[in-house]
Length: 101
Picture 1 (cartoon, rainbow, N blue to C red):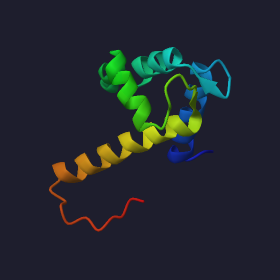
Picture 2 (cartoon, rainbow, N blue to C red):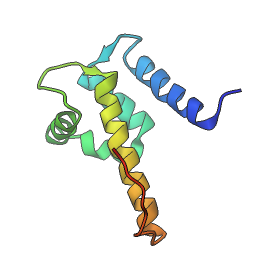
Picture 3 (tube, helix red, strand yellow):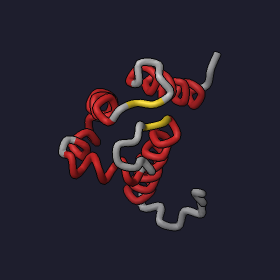
Picture 4 (tube, rainbow, N blue to C red):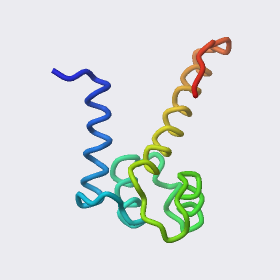
């Protein structure tokens, strides 16, 4: 039996492979399709070329470059940190001693 965390990581890897047609990288079109299906709340950010360009830059993707799993992981990390921060803010846990590195 796998833990919830192991299953979550497996899901991220599997969804990347599915979107990239089992290639080691994906195109920006494949990326947009995956985001619209798997992160619908975030998908509005990448609907425009400008928004997509900003997200890709934040992920470390240069213009015209394919998107690697490492690039995708950068996005997941940013989303997770935002979720973590907002969950603590909502609970008024402003004195959290957690360190994210």
